[in-house]
Structures are given as C-alpha cells and as structure tokens.
Amino acid sequence: MRRMVSVIAALMIALSWVLMTPAVSRADSSDDSIKDFQVAASVGKDGVTTVHLDIAFDFGADSGHGLYLAFPLQQAIENDPDHWRMYDYTLGAVTSSSGANTEISSEESDGNLIIRVGSEYRTFTGTQNYQVDYTVRGLVAPNNASSGLDEFNWDVVGRGWQVPIGKVSVAITGPAAITQTVCFINGSPSTPCTATTADDRATFAATGVGNGASVQVVAGFPAGTFVGAEPRYTKRLTPENMFPVNAFTGSVTALLAGGGLFLLWRRTRRAARDQVYLGLTPGLAPAAGQQGTIGYDNAKAPVTVAFTPPRGARPGEIGTLIDATADQRDITATMVDLAVRKHLTIEQTGKKDFTFTLTQGTDELAGYEAKMISKLFSGGGQVTTADLRDSSYAGMLTEIRSSMYDRVTKELHWFVGNPALARGLAIAGAVVLVAAGVGLGLLLGQFGWGLVGLALIVVGIGVLIRNNSFGRRTADGSAVLAQAKGFELYLTTAEAEQIKFEEGIDVFSRYLPYAMVFGVAERW
Image (cartoon, rainbow, N blue to C red; front, top):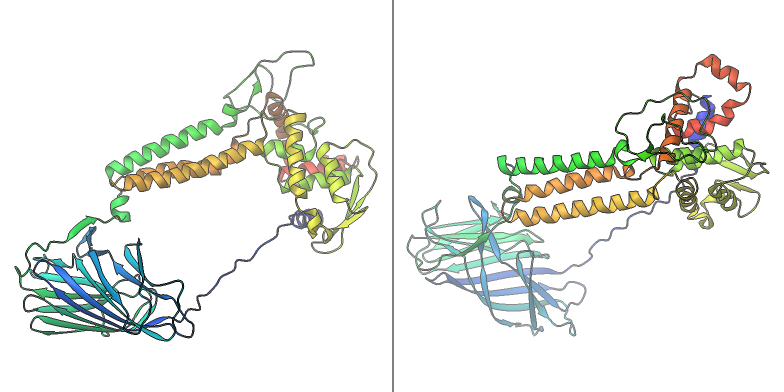
C-alpha cells in the first residue's frame, strides 16, 4: 500500500511541469571619483551663506560628459523628529578652469537638488576642475535650544553624492568670533573628520566620504550674532508620526478591520453563498419533472455515509466541486481514473519517471478527458515524463483545467458561474483593497491617521486567503457535494475487514482516484 502511495506522490510531482527562471543581477563598473572637494563659505548676519565650491573630478579610465552635484534641500533637527529644516538655494556662476563644458540643468530628487553639469554632445577624460558659486539660506538656527548659541549647521556633503570623494575641506567665515565647532560623518563624530577655529574662521577636513556617506559641519556663534536668519521648517513625515498607535487610531482601525472581516466571513460561508433544495434531505434532488424550492439554509447539514460515489460524477469533477479549484491533485486523479477505465496504462520507469501508453477504453470520455488523451498522446501512442518537458506540451495543463471548469459549470451545472473567474475577481479585488489601504494610509498619514489604512489591507489579505470561497454552487452542486462528503466519510471510516471483502470485487482500484481527491489515498 505504501508503495502505491509513493507512486501516486511521485506521479503528482512528475506532472507539475514547473519551469524556474533564475534572476539576473548586474554590477556598476563606473570608476568616476572626486579627488578634491573644496568649499569656501561666508555667512552673513542675515543668515544667507555665500559659497564657492571647487571640485577636481576624475573621469577614470573612461570618458564622461560631466558631473552631478547633489545639494541637500533638508536637514534633520536634533530632538525634533517631526520637522525638517529647509535649505533655499540660488545658483550662480558655474565654470571650469580646465575647459570642461559647464552647461547646467537641475531637478529635485529624494530631498536633494540635483544639478547636472556638462553636455551630452561632449566628453572629457582624466581630471577636470569645476567651480560653482551659489548662495543658500537656512543653515543658521539662532539661539539653539541645546547650546544657547547661534548655530551654523550644514550638511556640506549630503547623502546624495553617489561617487567616492577622496578629500573634503571646508572653510567657514562668519560675522563674529566662532566659539565652538564640531564635524560629523554620517551623523556621528568620527576621527577622520577634524575641525579647527581661528577667530571668525573655522576649517573642517574629512577623507574617504561620498557614495552616500555625508559630512556635516557645525559652528557656534554668540547668541544674537544673526538677525532675521530663522530657517524655514516643513513637516517631516516618519512612520512614528504618520502611523501612530493610540487609543483613537487603534480603536478605529480595529473596528473597521473587524467589521470588514465579519462581512467577508458572512459572504464566504457556504451556507450563505451556495444554493440548496429546501425541504429535501441533503444529497437529494427533486425527481425528474418535479419543481424544487431553491434557497439558502444556514443550518449545518448532517453528512450521511454513502458507500458509492455520486452517480455519474468522476474523481476530477468531485475534486473541483469540493474546493472550486481544478488543481494538480484533480488532474492526477483523472489520469489514474483513465488508467482504471483502461484508456491508458501508467508504468513507473524511475524515481520520478513514468511512461504512459494509450489503450482502447470502452466507456465514453468527458470533454476534458478527451482533451487530456488528445494532448497527452499528440505525438504518438506512448509518451514519457521526459517528453512532457518539451515546449510542445506547454499550456496543456491550463487547457485541461479550463475544460474541467467548463464541465462542472456549463455541462453539470454545479456552479452558478465559473469558479476560476470568481476566484480571479476575488484576487483582483484583494489587490485593489491592499493598494487602496496603502494609498489611504499614506494620505491619512499626512494628518497622523495613517494606521486606518491598515484596516483595508487586513481585509484585502482576508479576501486573498478566502479567494476560493467566492464560487457559488447551484442546488444541484450542493446535492452532489453532500453525496461526495458522505462517500468521503465511508472511505475514511470503513473497517479493514469490509475493505478486504470489497477488494474482491476490485472496488479498491475503482475508488482509488476518489480517495486521491479526498486526500485519503494512503488509508484507502
């Protein structure tokens, strides 16, 4: 018996025909770099800083059109995670002492002002020198709360620089004597970043930055040095202030999510969606010519043991009726059933290798069975699992599944509509709900209510999990399902002596495909 079960499992694996495509990754081979990054800045009493930037840009082994300047537009504020301090730039002259092209274009991206220097029609090699003049407002915070000083604080090299920078030197001149200085790399004090002070001038130096590593310089002036230099602030959106969990957001989100899941549960219960014949014992249908009353019954129907499968219902059809899905198990059971009915033979030739041989059965084939035989033996009277990997068999399973859905919907009338279509619409609806939840969360997050969007996401995930429960069975389908459940009960509870007696009339082989779709082949 265990040998038979292992053969069935191997057959299901062999019929999967799944192709895997490996992912491909690529590496950036650019060797551009900045050898020297020199900054000279003069801070006025009004807080406007005039900057002269001198860059030695090395194009490496390849020629290049120019360089990109990345000026940060915002800076985090110490002890204030909810606001940005904003920088306002005015670009002046852009020149090149080495003769490189200095045409410019600009755009804002990821919190940076990106300036492209150069022309797409000209290229340069080796090291080129660029000089950039500009002014920036917003670097001064008068009467800083933590230091009590007028604080000049600047991300002079922001995280937007995507090339290595060998050496950075910064000179700051102010309208009064500088009393304190500090330099940071990536937001924390670091030995390679140094700072010195001489009266109203401070110099800073760092090495090995760029490629996302920032340099921040800070100079403290006596309180009252700057007049009208207050920076501009904007709201800084973070997960903490966009999606706060508190009594209000938590209760509203839980209420909406709970209500949505309750409605989903009510909609997808079998008793609420499947039609039944009212007034008849489950498993029975009106006699020919009689009119039955069709409705919905919330009472849990009892299951009566049935010693035979539903009349005229084949294993793959029963499997599709049970879970509204024509899956791999149903197709494998159909193939075994065709072998039982002498339409083909199955011979195991290796651990996961089989040979299928066409034979002449005597009973009539359903449409999906005829399609399986036709597709399987399209190249001759014998086929192996190795042959089935050929591209000519691509799409065979999809076609068979489609025919099985047509069989249970259009011919047997067990479903109100194609369950595959209902499942597809449910999945699409789930995706829409999740996307809407994300969008609503981001929108309401501007006001601190982003957590509410989670309710739609939870309901969408629930729809995705329950996508198989949207197909509606007809009253005939419900009657056959009740019979199938009764037969499943027999297969799972029959005593060994009874099975032994019935094996004498070959009931084992005839019922094995049904045991497969019920998932009890090992016991049977």
